[in-house]
Length: 380
Length: 101
Image 1 (tube, rainbow over the protein chains, first blue to last red):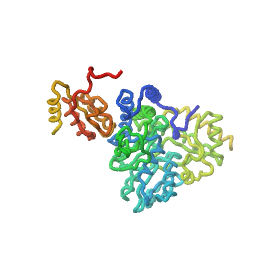
Image 2: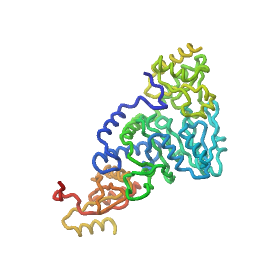
Image 3: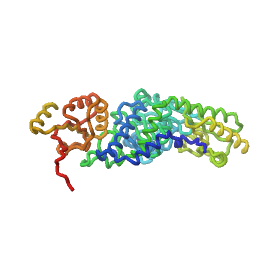
């Protein structure tokens, strides 16, 4: 099997991730649910993970990092917890459904209005249009750092500056960028960064969270067991427990910590460079194949995603051929990014997404190029 | 009374008994942070349950020698690690305590 679906979930993890999860399964108690050895082992691991991840995002206070089960949950926490009746929100057509659907639900229930900033056919965004979308009652802009369809990276520092100039918060969906693109909450003035653990942070599925700038109060959408203030009727008001309820997935967080430690030891820049080199090799290899259409490239940078179609053939057919005949895993279809597909003109056809990891090899990439060459020939 | 005076008072009220200091927290995350910082500074702190006489919002406390309590307090203040109080109590662990069997 050749795995090129890393934008969905990284399949190849640093070996220490599985070791950490296995050790945790056999030794952890509940985080904050006792002070015996097993609970403290879990508690210190989770605390170390808060430190490591906050540091990865350029934020000095690990208490501002709450864990969730994925980026979707984190985005729901941030968006739903910040909105008040009568608010207006801004997002872009590059957004994943993890941003769009919470906003659409808020709109459909009458809670808030939504303005969607268009994306160009090359995946680019016009920042003047982004600024023009703001209104006096705009409470927040929820934006993706990088498109999960094209890998185009957007200028979140500039978006934060625009949002703040209009008195709004910037909520960043970093699902595609955490671990592979530099994120600095302090220098870029970001308000909330939502991440998932199972993609380029190399953690297990079921891990993720949000890092919230101090002073921003997000109403929790779930309350319950916290391990503290047990006789109070209300959930704790302080971070990180404010946005966490119930027993944490400490087993998963142990693996996430191992993944993030691997990244910080190796360096985000190194991982990005290696991944982009593989993506560029693939792009250059398929660019000249007749009938192959490539998408995106209009962002300020790019993650390890190259998305294509062959003629007008159904993207699902191409992905199925890649899987069945070449053992290559890609992702076809809509990618939970309906507006981005509309922007690219692929909403009917879908597209075949190749998303690379720095664990892939040049030989694998060349096998991918050869497979596309053969399929394009077969379908022509 | 400041911390030193409270420790001294506890010692006078419990002659011949070792006095331990418990740092109390609202959040166990704060306890983890101060534990890590204190250990890194070479202090002998350990995470403990909070004795009933020193109830706090969270059940986790940091047990430190009263001789080092001032240093731990300084670390907490310097690192902006919130804590509720530092409580000197007579040693809670005795090998001659009643044992349920």
